[in-house]
Length: 198
Image 1 (cartoon, helix red, strand yellow):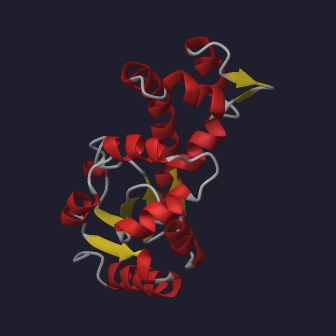
Image 2 (tube, one colour):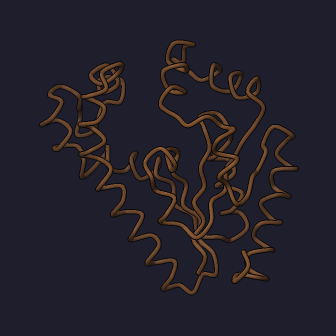
């Protein structure tokens, strides 16, 4: 089984691209979805203990947690040290299940794949990209997003150009979803037809 790591900077269309792989019958796993599940389950007591008042009604309150860590590198590192091992466990369980199911290909979406040194865990890497103007327009349209927040997020992410240089495959979502879907199908076809050369 080939395991693809899917990544890209904020606003590039990773989640949409992951759904395209899923629509083609490929098993997929999202680190963001795993975090969402953990924030409503196993991570709640751990995060409340580390960041008192950051949970409510049995769930992590993302707005309160964001206030607790925003602009404070040491607090963000503390949060990541708590959450990343739990997310990694979910990823390992997913890959094992996909392998057992006989899948030829599985895709794992990790937003900070290169930044966290995770590329060695995957057979190949797909980078999702788009023109910087499209990226900014998408991100700034999100509720509660500001230019300041966007700049802070981008400062933590490897530049898009560097990610593309290190990618095995690139999917550009800036040319429309039909073009992106064709790229997804081409990658799947190539890998499944020639897994040893993928």
